[in-house]
Image (tube, rainbow, N blue to C red):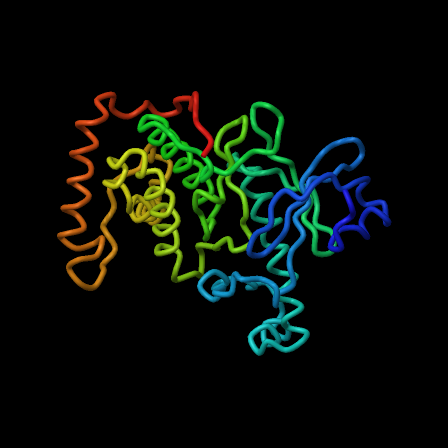
Length: 297
């Protein structure tokens, strides 16, 4: 293929041998399939700040940069030219460090190899056929498959939380259906729990996003839509290791009686669950169950 402008110079410099395909383009980066020393990998090329659509970063970066000197912190707070450069470097380095810590802790994420300029090189996540893995959002599932997937991703999130981090933008679009199981990707907006007052809310939102998507295939999952809240309480109490499955959490307060947190919303969820129970007599799949025969959309 013709060399993309954002990565062609790396071939010329000998950092990589070839660019094979553009894999995906997201709100903060474009990912390519590349070859280096005879092996395929993924190269994530970060977009310039003015090209990104992921703008609302304040709630994520709270608590970061605590080890920088006071001059750097002031420059970043004032958004000077020097400070903006530091923010960009930190944004990219944060994903590399988060992936490294998560991978070493046993979270199913792509293994990061190295960061060069504005490019993150990492493992290429593939499916059972050896092709680049597709997103969870691209598949349909049975009720049993959806429940098993929810359990598996939840436990990955729990392990990540054990490292003191929260994904920050988790959804069905940031989970790949790899040969080894659902794999979490895209972590530049990772949240450091220590020092971030938004951590509990962000964790709840991450798991609610995932749960509500999979509840399209099994509405019974809606009863644990706020499992992130319960999980965060375990972290605070030091009982995270005892968690083996999603638990019912306190629903987030919402204004008005017609929202998801109001009576009508809860009644609707119970109604959907009741109808689903009549339609799907098989019940939930056991934890760790395989996901056979899933259908691409």
